[in-house]
Figure 1: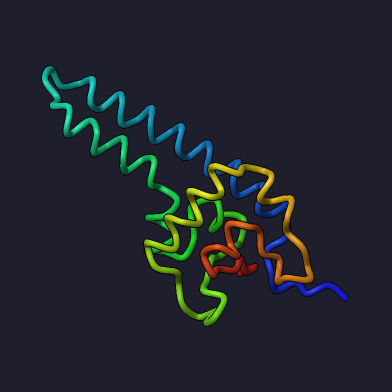
Figure 2: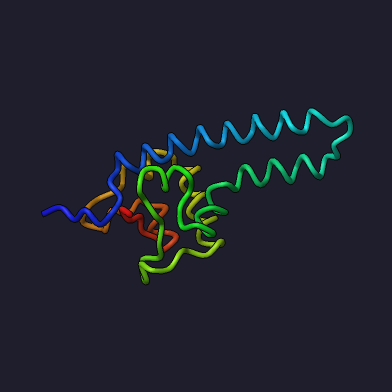
Length: 130
């Protein structure tokens, strides 16, 4: 018996692809905007870069989903309380492990463990179908 409550691997991959396009678009847009100004300080450039890099944990904390998650119908929640979003420190842990392990982490998804990947287990999160 399959539980349709949890995000499926294919949907999670689709969300990652959408998010990759969003991040590339953001990087190009911010770069273009910054290039319109003659003297943009390095701290401003670093802040913009940092915000783009932290796209996933910021949106996961604030919205419970990235743009990719929202478009594909997924949401990230606490495993201990599926009505609550995860906090920024846990979203950051989740993001760093997901980025470091890449698709290896996604290959650990199993219906036996609520569809959790390694990065979900480490962050105490689950991905639900909206």
